[in-house]
Length: 114
Length: 114
Image 1 (cartoon, chains in turn yellow, green):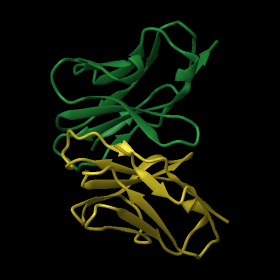
Image 2 (image 1 turned 30 degrees about the vertical axis):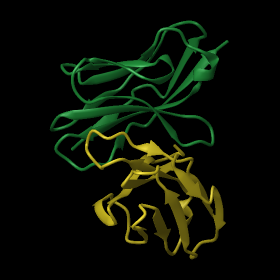
Image 3 (image 1 turned 90 degrees about the vertical axis):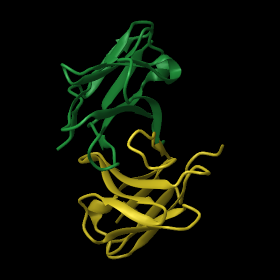
Image 4 (image 1 turned 60 degrees about the horizontal axis):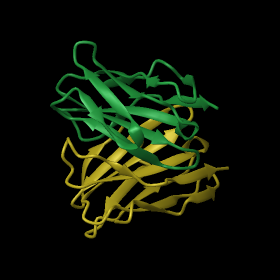
């Protein structure tokens, strides 16, 4: 089975721009979660989608949004980029979204905001 | 509220020696505990998890972890370290009565010295 894929792997943007990141979960998985990883804040949960519905959201401003499509692929969007948004954005997929599920992570998208 | 502590930012161990990476947690309900490893410029790779049952959990690449409810700990261990084990290790918890997202510790950098 193919793993979680994320595109693009690297992005460079300037302040004020917006960006869209894409994630394709493992085939058959219906849950997709997004995390932000920075040296200062570590790994922080952004949001989770299950069957096209946002089930859970972390403590991030409204500039961060996402969606999930009927094929379980997910996108996250960050509008009005700030320097502090520079981070590794990780997507994780889970089979059914149960508490006992393992989340499998993609390689991440490295976003640099200049 | 849930929390995870990894008290050591850095652990150094000689190749062939046993290694331990420490993790303690705090949750209100039943804990679901996970260990992940991250290599440079890569996403997180799942190592093992504790859901219920036997307190000693065996995982990938010869790693194991012991769940200790009284000490609220979930330390990662390996009997004989390899240089290739050098990486960043994250402990994570999911609270049994809470949301589905993982809450991560700050990570421990393991260096195995040849």
